[in-house]
Every structure is written in C-alpha cells, then in structure tokens.
Amino acid sequence: MATALQAVRGMNDVLPDEAPLWQRFEDTARRVFEQYGYRNLRVPLVEPTPLYVRSIGEHTDVVEKEMYTFADRLNGDSLTLRPEATAGIVRAAIEHSLTYERPQRVWTAGPMFRHERPQKGRYRQFHQFDVEALGFPGPDVDAEQIVMLARLWRALGLTGIALSINSIGDADERRAHRAALIEYFEAHNNALDEDAKRRLHANPLRILDSKNPAMQAIVEGAPRLVDRLGAASRAHFDELRALLDEAGVRYTVNPRLVRGLDYYNRTVFEWVTDALGAQGTVAGGGRYDGLFAELGGKPTPACGFAIGVERMVLLLEAQAKRDASAADAYVVHAGATAAPTARRAAEALRDHGANVVVHAGAGNFRAQMKKADASGARFAIIVGDDEAAAGTVAIKPLREGGEQVAVPVADLAARFAALQSR
Ligand code: HAM
Image (cartoon, rainbow, N blue to C red; front, side, top):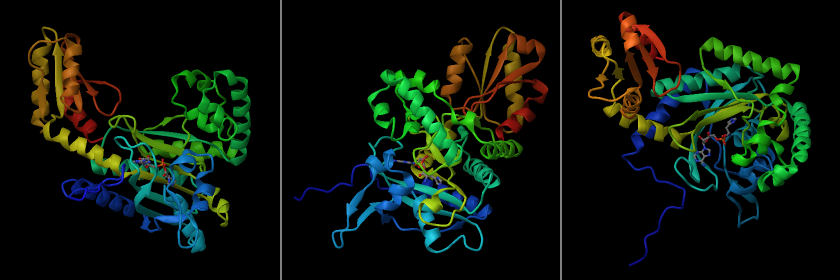
C-alpha cells in the first residue's frame, strides 16, 4: 500500500466540527469592522521578496529566519509567501493610488506563513484578520481601532484580554534612542548573552524584548524611549490616552513594548490573554507613518493591527467549555456568622437570574478561593464575619483582573449585574 501523505508540519486542517467557531469569529469581526466603516480589500498570498525585506526589516526575526522564500523556477524571481498583510496592502495602495482622493479604512483576512517552531497558538500557516487605516494622521484613528477591538471582544463575549500600549516615537527620536541604547549595552557588554551581542548593532531595540531572566536587570535599566519623546510624539500619545480614557477602555502603558516588525512609529499596542500560555498575544498593531515612503509611495500616515484567528478560536473554545459548566458566581464564606449572609447573598443573585454556587463543607478562605477559581465562575462573592456584621459582601472578579469591591447586601444584585455586563 502507498504511504499516506500528511499535511506540512505547522499547517492545519480546520475540520467541519471546528469550523463553526471560526465562522462565528469571522462573521462577528466582519460585522464590527463594517460598523466602523472598514471595507474589504484582498491582496495576493505571494509577493516579491524585497517587499518584506524593506517593510518588515532586514534584521527582524521574520525576515532573518521565518519567511517562506523561493525562486520562481520559470523566471528566477525571488518570491515570498506573505508573513503578514500590511506590506501587501501598502503596496496595493501605492500601486492603485488608493489614497489619492481620500483616506481609506480597509480590512483583509486570510492565511499568513512564518517558519516558526509550532506549538499551541503558534503555527507555520496561521490566519489573521488585518485592519488598516490609510492616510489618517491620528491619534483619533489609533484610538478608534483600539475601541473597535474592545467592542469585538465584547461582541464575542470574551473577557480577560488586557491592553498594553506604548509610543516608540518618530524616526529621529528612535535614531537617538537607538544610539543611546547601543552606548548603554556596550557599557554592559560582559552581561549580554549571545543573542544580545549579535543584535547589539543591528537591532538593539530587540534586546529589550529578551526573555532571558539573566538579562532582565540590564534591560530594566536601559534608557527608555518613552522618556525621550519629542513634543509632537508626546502630544500624540497623550491624546491617544485621553481618547481611550474617554471611551472607558482600560490599558497599561508598557514602556518596554516593542513590536517584532520594523515599520512602526509612535503608537504600538498589543492585546494579551493569559489563558493561552506563552502565545497569549491575540492582536497587535500600531502606527506606521513611514512605510508608504519606504516602499516608494507618497508619504502617507497610517495605522493598523492584526488579530490571530487561531488564538481567537482557542479562546472561544475555552469559553464554550466554561459556559457549559460554570456558574456566574461562587460564594465563599468562613466564620460563624457568615453562612446566613452568604445564603442570603446567593438567593438575592438568583432572584435576578444568576447561576450561583455556595461553597458547601469545610475549608478556610484560601481553600475555598481555589475551589471558586477551579469552578470556572466569573466572580467570587466573599463573606467573612466582619462583612456579615457590616451587612456587606465583597465581589472579586476571577477572570479579567480588576479590584475586589465591597457592596452592601441590599445593593448586591444591581452591582453584580453592572459588573457582569462590563
Ligand atoms: P504581528 O504581531 O506579527 O503583527 O501579528 C499579529 C497577530 O498574528 C499576533 O498577535 C498573533 O495573534 C498572530 N500571529 C502571529 N504569528 C503567528 C503564528 N506563527 N501563529 C499563530 N498566530 C500568529 C502583524 O502581523 C502586523 N502586520 C499587524 C499590523 C497591521 N500592524 C499594522 N497593521
């Protein structure tokens, strides 16, 4: 019998049982993008290799070691399977003078190819939903894209995806910072690992991304670009933050956030979940005001991001499993007087339609909190003697971070409903 052939390592089939979650994500994303005026655009899966070398950058991991590059045997051209969509979209925009009359909001979706070591959430053929705003100087558009992503997570019912933002400044600021970094790392040369030494002159920014624990102290002490931004970049970043605050989107500023592709300036952002292990970044993007000119077009400010669809599907799968079994709240209580208050709190929540499990049997707070966590419930309701005496309970989010809040039992149902709809 002939041996059966298998798919290429890191390239997956999506079987009919798995497809519904993919379709749910795709339909929801398309709908949300349309709500913000983004229109579909489709570009080839294969482009001339120099497009990626010039845009993504010669000294990035993607270009150095992850691209599927091959010679077209019929004419000798060097071609590359697209590792991402932004470069192709900018090429198409230049080629068709797309932004000649007005700026454009566009999105595209499909497979991308990177020769990485496959693991959960990381594949050699993977899929992105990619969004680009072409011809907008921002920061209103930067904020709009982030707010749009927050809406998408809500529409999908996904919680626990945290936003990090940073500004990496403009080209001049980056050059000055790069020189300062090289000087700093050269002064600490004997503390650098091999990878860092190799990158020192080619791409010192990537050293900041080092996962090597032995390098962390050096990285922590490195000069920070966010402290050296010029007035225009600083104003752009401040305005972005004000717009996110106004929209009620929570974020942390991570001055160490750098992206793996070279074309970015000013705004960069990533959305990360801790539910997927090491491959927790579900979406990433930022501004790339220099890329059009870099690729031979007229200078055109732009901003965009891409979502990793496989990672979305993994999150939706986990959510579906949790939803099938989890209660909305798990009530933990310890102390002689706490139990009646715990039962009263649970009944009040059930009156409002919530599914609530009250801890039964023995166990101190710590042990009960572990049970609450393992139950998959989204919130713990915590009742101790002190709380019971004061007629209050505490609500603690278990999935998405956020502060524990104390509320009077009488207000519990209303406050709980407000937290649930967040
Ligand atoms: P990126 O951060 O390289 O950005 O990729 C975006 C997302 O694609 C990642 O956050 C991740 O979810 C997913 N992803 C990347 N590599 C893999 C992989 N090997 N397996 C599975 N998922 C993966 C870009 O590609 C930029 N073009 C985004 C952008 C658009 N910036 C401006 N406009």
